[in-house]
Image 1 (cartoon, rainbow, N blue to C red):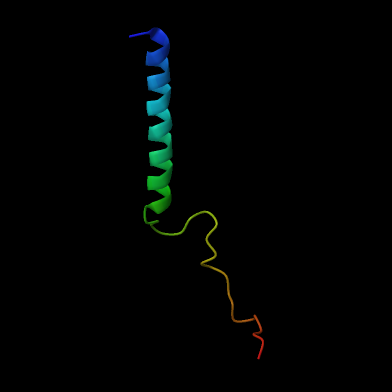
Image 2 (image 1 turned 90 degrees about the vertical axis):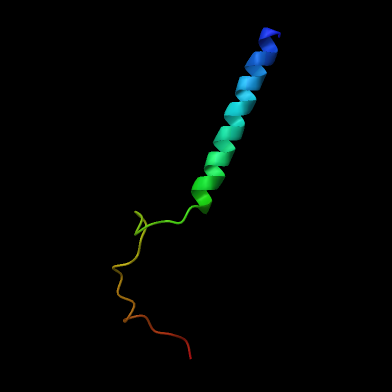
Length: 50
């Protein structure tokens, strides 16, 4: 095999791994509160439109 084909193949496998890992992590169920969680916010003071 040509050296350039091996490098392209390795880069392609890296890209496939990166994209599949990103998709997997975005679809995986999140456990608990994240850093942007608003669990402690008190919504009782908010007025609703009638």
